[in-house]
Image 1 (cartoon, rainbow, N blue to C red):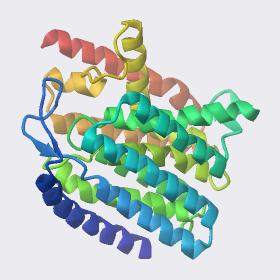
Image 2 (image 1 turned 60 degrees about the horizontal axis):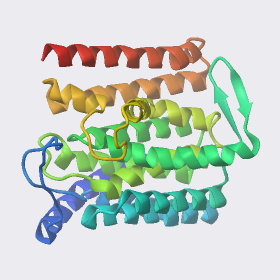
Image 3 (image 1 turned 90 degrees about the vertical axis):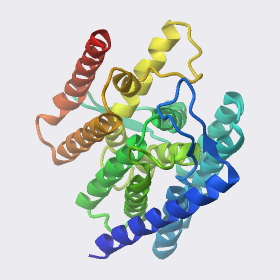
Length: 339
């Protein structure tokens, strides 16, 4: 019951907080002006996700204090604050990609020094793969990759808030079925879910405010670090983290590879992600946002099925999800040709 009450209280706080910060951002002229690559047509305040960051970090501090688990808590709060600060600087004055990636790399290294790294991963149908020290660069790439993946994918109204809400509730489920209701990690996931639900009250299409890099990079960091925090609490935590974020990961990875082969500037702004191409081909933004919410929900269901040991789960994860994405790519090309 206390979890449910906390969820609704935090949701209400987030909704009210975003309304306050929207007025503040407008006065400070922290505005996202539309251009030829934008998915919006009117000037819109950005940085509203600062409320998501503040609520998530505050809950992390309180829950870590109550559980007396200070080491993990301080690492998460300090580095998470740093990642959010980098994103905020990008929102306000636009950092160069080199500076941004350097600072994010330092944040990832600090996380590894404080929390450790993945020394083994489980691959469906193949089993456990022991990484040893190779786990250090893999963990580094995982953290930096997901930070930027979430940032790249935050391009239409409601998409990143919806995915964060769904993914965080997934982590609440994974931790809950493993008896971790009192764990600080459970409460961090709850705070992420609730604050994003409150934020969506302002960000659902047509959005009155954008979350900005301050929150998109922070959320990417959170979903990269939740598996690291859960290694000793949830079996195959890294695998679960990948499955939950599968749609965002595949969209970003395949788009990145395609642009690399075309010798395009892979870190420059573009509109060639699957979600962007679907919108350009004629689908309404809420439809595509709902699609990614459903795809993330599918990942949560399959991750839960894996935890419960359902026999269909390994094949569905390692074959079914990539096959579904190939179908989505084909459908996107069909829509583009038709339009």
